[in-house]
Length: 410
Figure 1 (cartoon, rainbow, N blue to C red):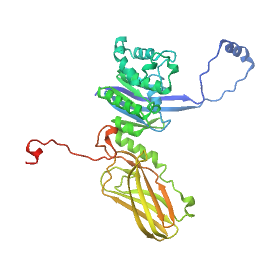
Figure 2: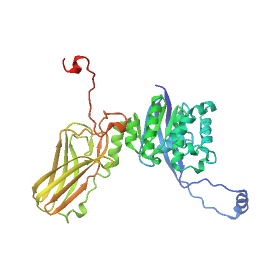
Figure 3: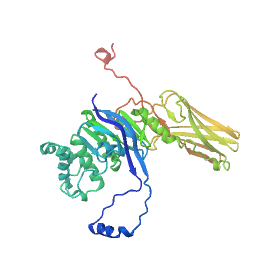
Figure 4: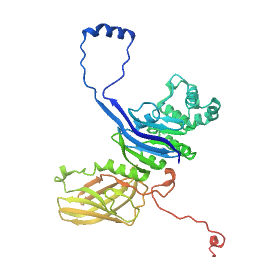
């Protein structure tokens, strides 16, 4: 395939604390007069690399995700690809007409109307007026700003600017579309609409580079992912694999979180949990839809009589997916592993959480929202759109029967 984005040794360095200052003529005259009488302290400048030694290739028609924590260098990389800023080292060669959506209203002029900004954006992309006019109605309809299209942009709300900016970027047919974390500004319905539009853009053979902290959006849209960390590429590969590794890393800092400080004052407390089967190297990663074994470790400080243990599984929206309970538990003081064996747990990829509780005949002993979250890193086998995929990740076989087989007479 044709490489449309080629990056080699790319780096961007900034000076810490430096802000460009602007002076009026009177300021310049005053500084010239007083300079002989002033002694200015000179401190050594400090620098940091927002991006350093980045190499990557992106081919025509690819949909690529950039993930990483805040400050990892994702937005800096997009700005370099967009030619908004110049690199300190290396180069980024971009072959094709680029449409960027990096910040709300990027490239728009606040004094111009919505209509005028649409034509301005198209002209910047090198489009003829007739080409822009053919797309005009679709852009305005998608953005939902028909009533305000002849109003200066400075009077638009942030949401209206976002909708118009995305509509322009997606409909004016750039060959390469760079999208930063701007969809977070819109509501859920708008985000779904944008993701659907980006899917349509990708089907037309155009290239998309997409930054998001919403891992389900990355899973749904992207084929390949670059994980940035500390200004460099930490890992790259298929979206499902890299997103699973990233989520594991983000939650691993919570893995030691416990409540030992007050447990000696209580009858008992859950202190940790783990997936003991299948083994994935990390105790909170589920990479198989087959049999699953879970252990929730309980520390009892007093005997348990007529105990009641409940367990529930919740999705990222905190909706209960599955739950059960065990009654009439009698246990001595000490450490106990509550083991749950499930024949299968066919869940869609993403984060989930367990909640376990323990009661006796006197009431609640412990109710724990388990940390870290359980991260499901299986390969999705359901509908490619989240709206129709559901929660379960169950494979199926499809066939068409004919003639007597349909009537059951075969």
